Image (cartoon, rainbow, N blue to C red):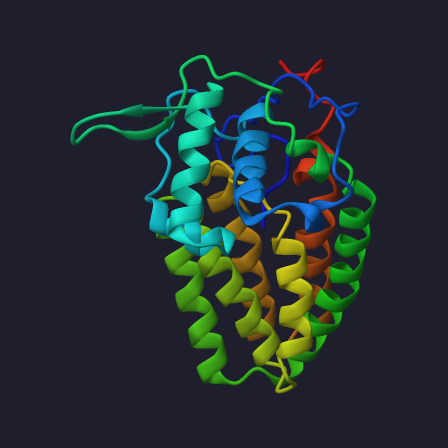
Amino acid sequence: MPPRPETAGGATRPVPGRPVDLEAPALVGIRRLTALDTVRARIALAVDLGLLAPGERLPANAEIARTLGVGEMTVRRALVSLCRDGVLERRPGRAGGTLVAERPARGVVQETAAYAASATAVHRLIDQRVLVECGVAHLAARAADGESLAQLRSLVEELDAAEAWTDFHALDQRFHEAVAAATGLPVEPYRALLEELYAYYLPYPISYLRASNDEHRRLVDALERRDPVAAVEVARQHVSVLHESMFVGLLGQGDDAP
């Protein structure tokens, strides 16, 4: 999950860019976007909000495709189009690849407006996840066995070592599904809610994502102590902050950014 918007763990707070044009002729919700448009929107919005920094190299196309749930060809076409738009640039050679432009064009990708228009739905999904996550944490604190706890501890260590937002995202989903599995109840309903919210996630600075992993660690600590009260409080904080740290909390901060 994206971390808190304030400085944490020595990371510098992402500086949002120029506010997204909420008056653009937006499609109603992201469900009307094509797979190509969703990739364009998610990367462009991350650049607009300062989550992807000028000169930052993007992960391999295959990793982006896996993380965003689209085909590799779709990612390739999206990145090429974002290069044409001036959001990204291509550099040749071993040290090259696809990078955020040194002076990226901001507010030029119309499809980002569909994400901004989904803010109410995203806040509702966050609230739903808070409710479910607290119940999952409470039950896991009572039911998690040694094998489940060892798996969770291992995933926390892997998350600490993640090198890119694509790596972190996959491990984050595995971690939360493993907590749900530790309850002994079916994971599928929880996974459906998780993936619906994940559809709105943007690339995020890996330093911030690693900082959010401290809450994963605290949750495992509470599960190991069989402390449902502490586990629920960690889970509540971990998800509630999405109201501030997801794009719905960052939109419009551009004028106040340091």
